[in-house]
Image 1: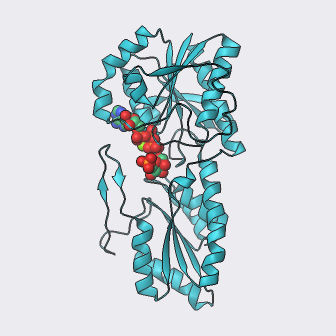
Image 2: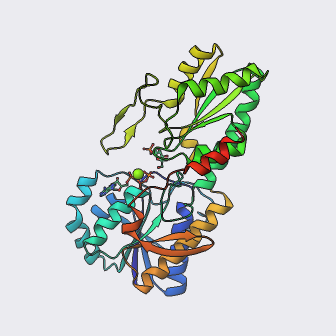
Image 3: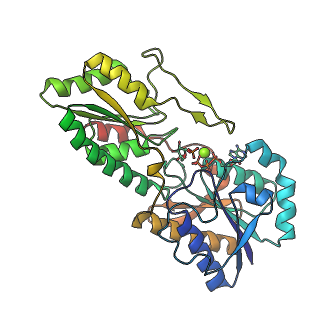
Length: 341
Ligand SMILES: Nc1ncnc2c1ncn2[C@@H]1O[C@H](COP(=O)(O)OP(=O)(O)OP(=O)(O)O)[C@@H](O)[C@H]1O
Ligand SMILES: O=P(O)(O)OC[C@H]1O[C@](O)(CO)[C@@H](O)[C@@H]1O
Ligand SMILES: [Mg+2]
């Protein structure tokens, strides 16, 4: 068989582990040929690819990023390119395409699949917000990076009697904020799923100082927002791909909390450090298993599906289900964290 792989959307620790695993399973065990499209869907639409053999994937398991490159392409450009993509798939003699990406990539995968292209998707995202898989690779690494940063920030915040508002990734969901905040013992966590009440947040942080504590750490997911009408808030704008360009929750909260509490409050934005660098062992293993199972799904002709973790098993689920809803932080999970803030 001939299989084309691509990585699309924001990069994520573990992408290289999937690529490596696909090549090993396909080339060594099945005698397949594998090619990699450069820079996501752009590579497919421009027929820009390289051959992936064992040499090409040597030494990449622990490397962050993606050896194939990634990009964002306007969805309408992709919709207009379906026939072109089909032409290249035929020209290259591809039996399957394995796109590795987040919800946007999986929507594009579904579109191509609905148009008859043979697709087996692999979910990735540090945000862990893909509904049909228990976990996505990249999340464990991102939570580890954020937790280490929070541990470090606690000591400097205490020395300077500051409130530090630490902004972590998570446009639509607060999984990284919840887990890193729990792991590091933060004092407040705000997530997109639960618009916060600024009076309650101020009271919570203020109570710490009243109790004699000399610092506070607030973890804020980048997509968190105040309850409507409770605080002046700049929501930002949208970029050309339709993604929200946030105006900075940490910056805005630091101004508000400093004014209300009379304590020095500073924003810290962890940004892309959460996404860069080497994946944890957990993410390497999950990514490797996804790659292996994607190749098996291709050989079984299970197209229009993607790999998913269910308990300890890897299964495949329809792409249509995968893109229906996002996995948000449920109230009971937030309550478990709130109890120890
Ligand atoms: N609704 C859609 N229909 C068709 N194609 C889409 C759609 N949404 C996204 N895409 C395509 O998939 C690409 C990747 O989507 P996006 O930029 O949202 O990244 P992602 O895969 O969701 O990863 P991330 O988690 O980083 O957002 C887009 O650049 C676009 O080409
Ligand atoms: O800066 P970029 O590459 O546009 O992507 C940022 C977004 O991608 C993610 O890392 C993954 O979805 C989000 O957490 C973040 O908001
Ligand atoms: Mg996306």
